Image (tube, rainbow, N blue to C red; front, side, top):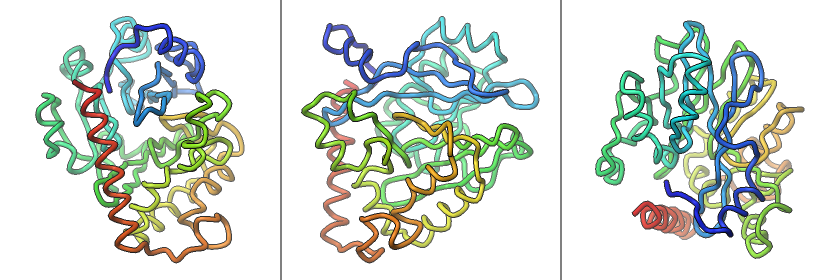
Length: 293
């Protein structure tokens, strides 16, 4: 997953589906920046990736879902503040932590529950200092609210930065611009339900999360209740306008019947569907491990 893009086709991919300029902090609002980077490839599908940077009240920076480390990016960030916190906000968004840890040895690394127990994480040498739950740690409890989304083999921590009214997600919403994707991959992306303007969690993830329906519903209701000014996530076109309505539409699959076509089925999923979803996730993780080598 954390690999360089050298050949012409991959460079073209980065230009086609990412959001240049890449690998530099771009201001969003007071105390909030985004850093877009070259895409990764998951199951053959190119995914643009994005890090969000928050400056806390004490001046320290929080890096949410770090992108690949670059010395020039670190220098640009350090002009904004000291890098104090590295956040792995979901089970799939930790692959670039080790290089940031080496460059910022005093930064605290936070992760979703259970991440440090995964074999691939242990073998990578990534250090996890603390886990994030529904309760914000004292260091940012006056500024950031947290919501934990859980399902089989999946965890995501969502952060709401109160001063800027910015909600940070990771994979709970993927909103790729279909016209920018390779033609052969567009039907796959549409089948997964991750094409703008109707992007949402990919189909396999929705199936998994429905097995924990009530807890996920409660979490989704909390997210909507924040009424954010903007919603930033790791993959695709984030919500910079009409954010509450866009968020509600993306979460319609769990918020209630009659809103989303998928919800016409009962909230529960059959064991066969659940098994297929788990196998899909396992296959995706296996693919990513091969790419990592």
